[in-house]
Structure formats: structure tokens, C-alpha cells
Image 1: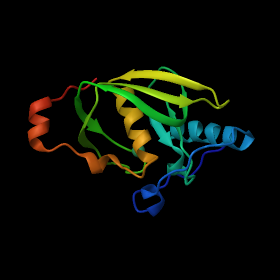
Image 2 (image 1 turned 90 degrees about the horizontal axis):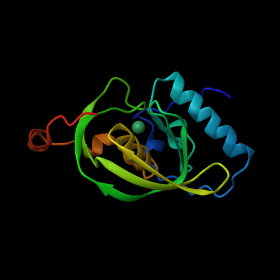
Image 3 (image 1 turned 135 degrees about the horizontal axis):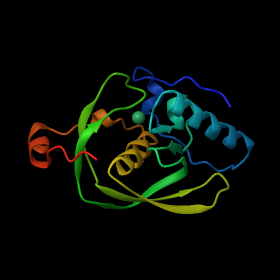
Image 4 (image 1 turned 180 degrees about the vertical axis):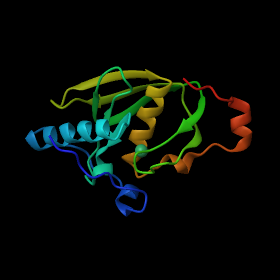
Length: 158
Ligand code: ZN
């Protein structure tokens, strides 16, 4: 395993759309292992492959209850609203309020190519949405809440 360099905001790759993963091979396993190690060493709760310069639809998430690997993820359902501070390993030192669903249900393949369904609330829901956005070149600063929304939904922090 190796720690890879996390691309920052100035890198245009973060705005590109990632491609579907089709091969579930050693190369993917190595990428996922490196992403998990890179996320951990940076104290993050999620990382998308594009953040280490690989335009593939792969994400790792760990909000403290175990590592989840999402390959070709899709959001199936969203429920409720949360308004809370969000940050990104690609935008070090920055934070902003966003509106995200309170709970999401996600479908994704695991490293063996099998489809699984995951449900997450609060921080985990936010991480699912944030990382899946990365796969389409979207950064959380595109979705900052305005003052009216912050006042309305308040700090519904986990
Ligand atoms: Zn991010």
C-alpha cells in the first residue's frame, strides 16, 4: 500500500467526470488500498479516486464505523435535510455549510463486482453525497447553503 498525493482545488482533474469501473482486478484493489491509506493518513472520512488523479468511479468512506468501498455508486433514495459544515481533503483548511439529505440509500459494487446497498444518515449520508459528487466533477463549494437556508435548517449537526 502507498499514500498517494491528494490533488487540490487548482488541479483541473477535479472538474472532470470519472469513468465507470469495468475491470475488477489487481489494479483496482491496489487503487482502493492506496485510497484507504491516503484517506486515513489525511484524517478524512471519504476519498474519491479522482482526488488521487484517477478518473474512475471509485470511492472509499470511513466515518469511524468501518471502511466502505463503493464502485460505480448511485444514489437510490434521499430523505430529509441536514445543514452542516462540510470540508474536503482537496480544499485543505476550508469549510462551508451545505444542505444534504439526512439519509441516503446508495447502490454500489464492491471490489469483487457484486452489487450491494448501503444506507447512511447524518455524517455518513453527507460523505456518500460528497464523494459521489466528486465522480461527476462536483465540489461541495458548488452547493454552499445561503444564509436563508442556514437560518431555516439551522445546525442539524450529527
Ligand atoms: Zn471532497
